[in-house]
Picture 1 (cartoon, rainbow, N blue to C red):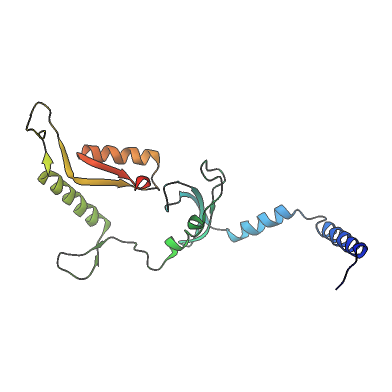
Picture 2: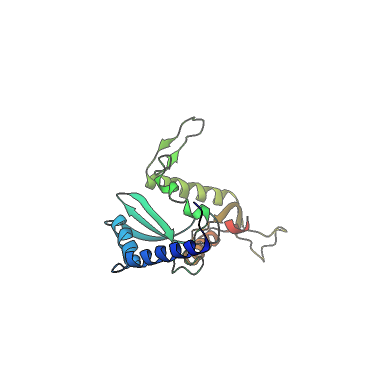
Amino acid sequence: MKLNRREFVKLTGAVGATLALVELGFDMKQVKASTKEFKLKNSKEFTSICTFCSVGCGMICHVKDGKLINLEGDPDHIINEGALCSKGASMSVVPNSDQRVKTPLYRAPGSNKWEEISWDEAIERVAKKMKQIRDENWIDKDVDGDEEYPANRTEALGFIGGAQTTNEETYTFVKMARALGATYIEHQARL
């Protein structure tokens, strides 16, 4: 198809006029918004924080029938203002994966298989093991043996924080670690 300049200008004007007439009486923003509403009907909306790195981008998640059906950046979030990187945008595969572990697993010493245990049993096991390790490795005196400056710590426990924790959760987490006498407290962002 060969067009001269005059025919090109006529065709461009005709296309522009057609597009203007097609949108008469229609608010395209409202049409797009209503299709989104239809897709998310009967779903619950949650806000979350991306777990892939330590930036802490905000996300809006829509869950329907126990499945994550929509994931988008939170436009009201101060860090990402609605944008998500490629890792954050692909986050929906994590909760919807059939390989995702949903209950605590325990492998007995010498065993070659994992068995499911209850959350109460898992918390009880972890608490007992932490207390045992803390008590067995407690340091109450200074390196020189000077009792005037008590050490009251353990170097056998270490804690690491993650990108999904909020400032308030991190504060509580550090208080718990300090109460247990841990000296090794780190965060994912620095590793």
